[in-house]
Length: 407
Image (tube, rainbow, N blue to C red):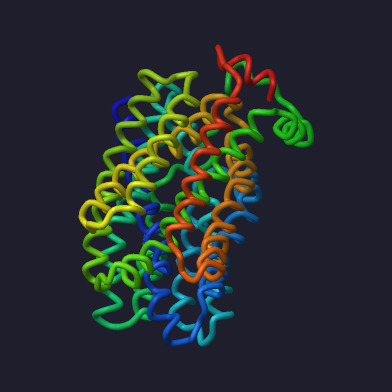
């Protein structure tokens, strides 16, 4: 028993490290686009399209990735996914045009699309339900660590050498991590456990019941608008700080470590809260998170002081994280365990269309309003309020059994 407990902790730790690298790769373009746009002469609209190329592929391959991890297990699928996105990141360092960069980012997005569903399946394979939210919060916190380290690592590598070398270094590290992950995770045969009370159903019926479940569509809609908020900020704030607020690249990188550092703590705290106080009540934490995030994004947009603006941004980031972990915990706890990967992939596939649309939407707003970031931030705040409205319509779930019957 002790060995089993230790092994699952090593597994979640390794997944955490891979997701740190994944978010370094995912967000590198948000900073690198500044020197890239100067080298290639890219307009704001085309910058948004390049950033969105990642999310288009990310959205399109979510369902496929979720299905594969349910069928083949997390070991082979997750390690392959890390290798694919890392090779895509390496390719970014060798491109010679904006089109080539968009294609390379699409490969990175296709690889990273598998990880959310794969991580959830790995957790259901290795953790009991009473600890799933905490395990997922550890994994999700890798995003915050990736953001925090990325601000300094990415700007540092660009300043030290070039944006091309930055992509190459990150990609090589990811390839090494994919090999280590394959070696650490147990084979599929060791994770296949009969789930009591779960009737065997055909693949067609399993997909059909997921599509018919109203909770599937409500979670997807909620996360769609959350992604517009989150990636609208992440994609355009670096340019905002440098071009509007006059910060240097390095100064922006250092300040940008603050929000995700607190976000790391918030992920772990929210995981504990969900297991302890919000079991069967995840929608209320989503509503709280979206409301507070909307308020503080508005305050950030109107703050004159840079330190105060980053303080407001930090608070909004903490509560946006509460939405994210609540969404994935809802899926893990309220859908059958043999469909967690597929459900996560389906929901995230639809929701990531918001991530795809967000950079282009904000880019279009900026182009149409003469670079008026105030209007752009107002659009983001409005989307956060939509999240509240959708989450309030989530059905009351009194027992997991009821939801599984619906699914």
